[in-house]
Length: 233
Image 1: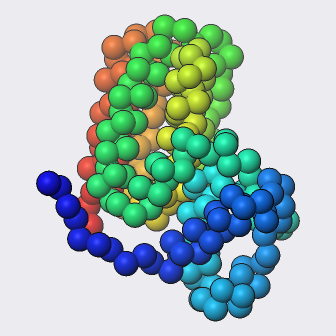
Image 2: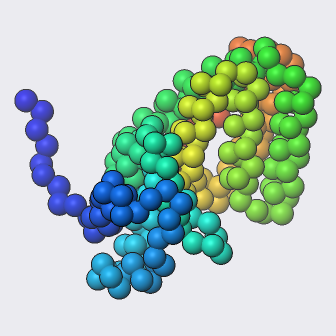
């Protein structure tokens, strides 16, 4: 029998549960604005750091949306049905994060394969523009993670498979939220930005050449590199 030790809930998990309960009971409805971070901290008698952690988790699950300058709002929970368990697993379990990277390899390998077969001129133009943006970011020493994410989603869209594209959006959004710190470490390690740039150009060139196998190979090599780097302490 596979039993595991009982783990005491962290404070932010309790906050997450309370807010989800309020939504489930109808006391908070889609579109409602949550109290400010300071007000939540005072009412729950916890630190603002715990509140921030809880809000980040809820955003990763798709339960809430944080709009800078406007506030934090409840989303339609049904839209986050796939994201929620995935996001919570990522936030609490590093091994789950590594397994998601493996899942990304399977999804994106196929997406790149199909994109190389199906990408039209507008898809290639979009990817080329993102590559140029990433090159500009590299020259300026700017973290290029936003452009990186858009590049991978552009490949999924070029695959012309709506289910695959939706899965990619779910996985990428979750990865982006839950591994933000690790992603920053990935980009700030000396030499990595240049390597990542080369890998993205290789992926783009294979798709542009309509070479499915080369595209799959290039993206899988890229994701394995990312996985190895994120596993480093």
